[in-house]
Length: 261
Image (cartoon, rainbow, N blue to C red):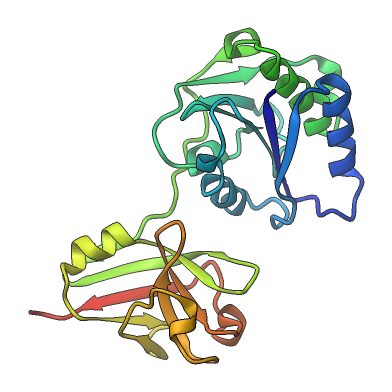
Protein backbone atom coordinates (compact mmCIF):
# COMPACT_ATOMS: atom_id res chain seq x y z
CA UNK A 1 0.00 0.00 0.00
CA UNK A 2 1.40 3.38 -1.04
CA UNK A 3 0.74 6.71 0.62
CA UNK A 4 -0.25 9.64 -1.60
CA UNK A 5 -0.19 13.08 0.03
CA UNK A 6 -2.01 16.17 -1.16
CA UNK A 7 -0.93 19.80 -0.77
CA UNK A 8 -2.89 22.53 -2.51
CA UNK A 9 -4.13 26.12 -2.46
CA UNK A 10 -7.73 25.06 -3.05
CA UNK A 11 -9.32 25.51 0.39
CA UNK A 12 -11.71 22.77 1.53
CA UNK A 13 -14.78 24.82 0.55
CA UNK A 14 -14.42 23.88 -3.13
CA UNK A 15 -14.95 20.57 -4.88
CA UNK A 16 -11.34 20.20 -6.02
CA UNK A 17 -10.03 18.18 -3.06
CA UNK A 18 -12.95 15.75 -3.19
CA UNK A 19 -12.63 15.34 -6.97
CA UNK A 20 -8.96 14.49 -6.79
CA UNK A 21 -9.47 12.06 -3.92
CA UNK A 22 -12.31 10.39 -5.81
CA UNK A 23 -10.16 10.01 -8.93
CA UNK A 24 -7.29 8.55 -6.92
CA UNK A 25 -9.53 6.09 -5.07
CA UNK A 26 -11.15 5.00 -8.33
CA UNK A 27 -7.80 4.42 -10.05
CA UNK A 28 -5.82 2.99 -7.13
CA UNK A 29 -8.22 2.06 -4.30
CA UNK A 30 -5.40 0.43 -2.35
CA UNK A 31 -3.64 3.80 -1.87
CA UNK A 32 -3.80 5.67 1.41
CA UNK A 33 -4.46 9.36 0.89
CA UNK A 34 -3.13 11.88 3.42
CA UNK A 35 -3.90 15.61 3.38
CA UNK A 36 -0.92 17.80 4.24
CA UNK A 37 -2.38 21.26 3.66
CA UNK A 38 -5.12 22.79 1.49
CA UNK A 39 -4.82 26.35 2.75
CA UNK A 40 -1.65 27.44 1.03
CA UNK A 41 -2.06 31.00 -0.23
CA UNK A 42 -3.12 30.98 -3.91
CA UNK A 43 -0.18 30.45 -6.27
CA UNK A 44 2.34 30.72 -3.41
CA UNK A 45 5.00 28.21 -4.42
CA UNK A 46 7.36 29.22 -1.61
CA UNK A 47 4.75 28.55 1.09
CA UNK A 48 3.83 25.21 -0.49
CA UNK A 49 7.47 24.19 -0.59
CA UNK A 50 7.97 25.20 3.06
CA UNK A 51 5.00 23.11 4.17
CA UNK A 52 6.04 20.04 2.17
CA UNK A 53 9.75 20.44 2.99
CA UNK A 54 9.02 20.25 6.70
CA UNK A 55 6.46 17.45 6.38
CA UNK A 56 7.81 14.87 3.97
CA UNK A 57 10.85 13.69 6.03
CA UNK A 58 8.36 12.15 8.47
CA UNK A 59 6.73 9.99 5.80
CA UNK A 60 7.90 6.49 4.88
CA UNK A 61 9.96 5.70 1.79
CA UNK A 62 8.14 5.70 -1.55
CA UNK A 63 5.44 8.14 -0.42
CA UNK A 64 4.06 10.08 -3.40
CA UNK A 65 3.54 13.82 -2.84
CA UNK A 66 1.17 15.73 -5.13
CA UNK A 67 1.89 19.46 -4.82
CA UNK A 68 -1.08 21.11 -6.49
CA UNK A 69 -0.11 24.76 -6.04
CA UNK A 70 0.39 27.02 -9.03
CA UNK A 71 0.17 23.78 -10.97
CA UNK A 72 -1.05 25.01 -14.36
CA UNK A 73 2.16 25.59 -16.32
CA UNK A 74 2.78 28.53 -18.61
CA UNK A 75 2.56 27.89 -22.35
CA UNK A 76 5.31 25.42 -23.15
CA UNK A 77 5.98 24.82 -19.46
CA UNK A 78 6.83 21.46 -17.95
CA UNK A 79 5.03 19.22 -15.49
CA UNK A 80 7.51 17.28 -13.40
CA UNK A 81 7.91 14.15 -11.35
CA UNK A 82 10.99 13.63 -9.22
CA UNK A 83 12.47 11.11 -6.81
CA UNK A 84 14.35 12.61 -3.88
CA UNK A 85 15.25 11.14 -0.49
CA UNK A 86 13.46 7.93 -1.53
CA UNK A 87 10.15 9.74 -2.07
CA UNK A 88 8.26 11.02 -5.12
CA UNK A 89 7.14 14.58 -5.87
CA UNK A 90 4.70 15.70 -8.56
CA UNK A 91 4.50 19.42 -9.37
CA UNK A 92 4.62 21.98 -12.13
CA UNK A 93 7.96 23.47 -13.09
CA UNK A 94 7.31 26.56 -10.97
CA UNK A 95 10.29 26.53 -8.61
CA UNK A 96 8.77 24.25 -5.97
CA UNK A 97 11.11 21.37 -6.70
CA UNK A 98 14.17 23.50 -5.99
CA UNK A 99 12.53 25.21 -3.01
CA UNK A 100 12.12 21.83 -1.31
CA UNK A 101 15.84 22.11 -0.54
CA UNK A 102 17.95 19.17 0.51
CA UNK A 103 20.00 17.06 -1.87
CA UNK A 104 19.65 17.12 -5.62
CA UNK A 105 16.85 14.82 -6.82
CA UNK A 106 17.96 11.36 -7.86
CA UNK A 107 15.96 11.75 -11.06
CA UNK A 108 13.59 14.34 -12.53
CA UNK A 109 11.36 13.60 -15.50
CA UNK A 110 9.28 15.85 -17.70
CA UNK A 111 5.94 14.05 -17.63
CA UNK A 112 4.43 12.85 -20.87
CA UNK A 113 0.75 13.59 -21.36
CA UNK A 114 -1.79 13.75 -24.15
CA UNK A 115 -3.02 16.89 -25.89
CA UNK A 116 -6.38 16.39 -24.19
CA UNK A 117 -4.75 16.25 -20.75
CA UNK A 118 -2.69 19.34 -21.56
CA UNK A 119 -5.80 21.33 -22.49
CA UNK A 120 -7.54 20.44 -19.24
CA UNK A 121 -7.50 23.23 -16.64
CA UNK A 122 -7.49 20.80 -13.69
CA UNK A 123 -3.96 19.45 -14.10
CA UNK A 124 -3.99 17.57 -10.80
CA UNK A 125 -7.07 15.62 -11.84
CA UNK A 126 -6.08 15.04 -15.46
CA UNK A 127 -2.36 14.26 -14.99
CA UNK A 128 -1.15 14.02 -11.38
CA UNK A 129 -3.78 11.47 -10.33
CA UNK A 130 -2.88 9.13 -13.19
CA UNK A 131 0.86 9.45 -12.61
CA UNK A 132 0.53 8.97 -8.85
CA UNK A 133 -1.44 5.76 -9.33
CA UNK A 134 1.07 4.43 -11.86
CA UNK A 135 3.88 5.09 -9.38
CA UNK A 136 1.85 3.40 -6.64
CA UNK A 137 1.54 0.35 -8.86
CA UNK A 138 5.29 0.17 -9.40
CA UNK A 139 5.91 2.03 -12.66
CA UNK A 140 9.42 3.53 -12.85
CA UNK A 141 9.72 7.25 -13.48
CA UNK A 142 11.52 6.67 -16.75
CA UNK A 143 8.34 5.10 -18.16
CA UNK A 144 6.29 8.17 -17.27
CA UNK A 145 8.37 10.86 -18.93
CA UNK A 146 11.71 12.03 -20.21
CA UNK A 147 14.61 12.55 -17.76
CA UNK A 148 15.62 16.20 -17.60
CA UNK A 149 18.10 18.41 -15.81
CA UNK A 150 16.54 21.55 -17.22
CA UNK A 151 13.97 22.84 -14.76
CA UNK A 152 13.45 25.79 -12.41
CA UNK A 153 16.07 25.31 -9.68
CA UNK A 154 15.02 28.18 -7.47
CA UNK A 155 16.56 27.77 -4.03
CA UNK A 156 15.23 28.69 -0.57
CA UNK A 157 16.07 32.18 0.68
CA UNK A 158 19.14 32.01 2.90
CA UNK A 159 20.24 34.36 5.71
CA UNK A 160 23.34 36.50 5.31
CA UNK A 161 26.28 36.74 7.73
CA UNK A 162 28.28 39.93 8.12
CA UNK A 163 30.77 40.56 10.92
CA UNK A 164 28.92 39.62 14.12
CA UNK A 165 25.43 39.73 12.59
CA UNK A 166 23.01 37.27 11.02
CA UNK A 167 20.31 38.88 8.91
CA UNK A 168 17.44 36.55 8.17
CA UNK A 169 13.92 36.70 6.82
CA UNK A 170 10.54 35.53 7.97
CA UNK A 171 9.60 32.74 5.60
CA UNK A 172 6.35 31.47 7.10
CA UNK A 173 3.53 32.67 9.34
CA UNK A 174 1.91 29.69 11.04
CA UNK A 175 -1.72 29.26 12.09
CA UNK A 176 -0.94 30.75 15.52
CA UNK A 177 0.56 33.81 13.80
CA UNK A 178 4.04 32.87 14.97
CA UNK A 179 6.73 34.14 12.61
CA UNK A 180 9.18 31.46 11.45
CA UNK A 181 12.53 32.63 10.09
CA UNK A 182 15.16 31.03 7.87
CA UNK A 183 17.78 31.18 10.65
CA UNK A 184 18.58 27.64 11.72
CA UNK A 185 19.80 26.60 15.15
CA UNK A 186 22.94 25.21 13.55
CA UNK A 187 23.76 28.58 11.98
CA UNK A 188 22.88 30.51 15.16
CA UNK A 189 25.12 28.28 17.30
CA UNK A 190 27.97 28.30 14.79
CA UNK A 191 28.10 32.07 14.35
CA UNK A 192 27.24 32.88 17.96
CA UNK A 193 29.64 30.38 19.53
CA UNK A 194 28.03 30.82 22.94
CA UNK A 195 28.14 34.64 22.95
CA UNK A 196 25.43 36.96 24.23
CA UNK A 197 23.13 38.33 21.56
CA UNK A 198 20.24 40.63 20.75
CA UNK A 199 17.51 39.70 18.26
CA UNK A 200 15.90 42.70 16.59
CA UNK A 201 12.40 42.42 15.15
CA UNK A 202 11.15 45.20 12.87
CA UNK A 203 14.43 47.09 12.93
CA UNK A 204 15.08 48.40 16.47
CA UNK A 205 11.45 48.41 17.55
CA UNK A 206 11.51 45.07 19.41
CA UNK A 207 14.45 43.27 20.98
CA UNK A 208 14.86 39.78 22.47
CA UNK A 209 18.04 38.69 24.24
CA UNK A 210 17.27 35.12 25.27
CA UNK A 211 16.14 31.90 23.61
CA UNK A 212 13.23 30.12 25.27
CA UNK A 213 12.95 26.34 25.22
CA UNK A 214 9.13 26.40 25.40
CA UNK A 215 6.41 28.99 24.90
CA UNK A 216 5.22 28.77 28.52
CA UNK A 217 8.58 29.90 29.89
CA UNK A 218 7.44 33.43 29.07
CA UNK A 219 4.51 35.24 30.75
CA UNK A 220 1.33 35.59 28.62
CA UNK A 221 1.49 38.53 26.22
CA UNK A 222 5.27 38.79 26.13
CA UNK A 223 7.50 38.51 23.09
CA UNK A 224 9.77 35.47 22.83
CA UNK A 225 12.14 33.62 20.52
CA UNK A 226 12.71 29.88 20.35
CA UNK A 227 13.91 27.20 17.97
CA UNK A 228 10.89 25.25 16.82
CA UNK A 229 10.36 21.60 15.93
CA UNK A 230 12.22 22.01 12.61
CA UNK A 231 15.09 23.91 14.33
CA UNK A 232 14.29 27.32 12.84
CA UNK A 233 14.26 30.52 14.86
CA UNK A 234 10.68 31.53 15.60
CA UNK A 235 9.32 34.82 16.91
CA UNK A 236 6.13 34.51 18.97
CA UNK A 237 4.01 36.16 21.62
CA UNK A 238 2.88 33.85 24.42
CA UNK A 239 -0.87 33.31 23.92
CA UNK A 240 -0.82 36.15 21.38
CA UNK A 241 -0.61 37.10 17.72
CA UNK A 242 2.99 38.05 16.94
CA UNK A 243 2.62 38.56 13.19
CA UNK A 244 -0.50 40.69 13.53
CA UNK A 245 0.58 42.80 16.48
CA UNK A 246 4.11 43.39 15.19
CA UNK A 247 2.98 43.80 11.56
CA UNK A 248 5.22 40.95 10.38
CA UNK A 249 4.96 39.20 7.03
CA UNK A 250 7.10 37.04 4.79
CA UNK A 251 9.13 40.04 3.64
CA UNK A 252 10.07 41.12 7.18
CA UNK A 253 13.70 41.01 8.32
CA UNK A 254 15.06 39.58 11.57
CA UNK A 255 18.55 40.56 12.72
CA UNK A 256 20.70 38.76 15.31
CA UNK A 257 23.62 40.76 16.67
CA UNK A 258 26.23 38.88 18.69
CA UNK A 259 28.35 40.66 21.30
CA UNK A 260 32.12 40.65 21.41
CA UNK A 261 33.62 38.33 24.01
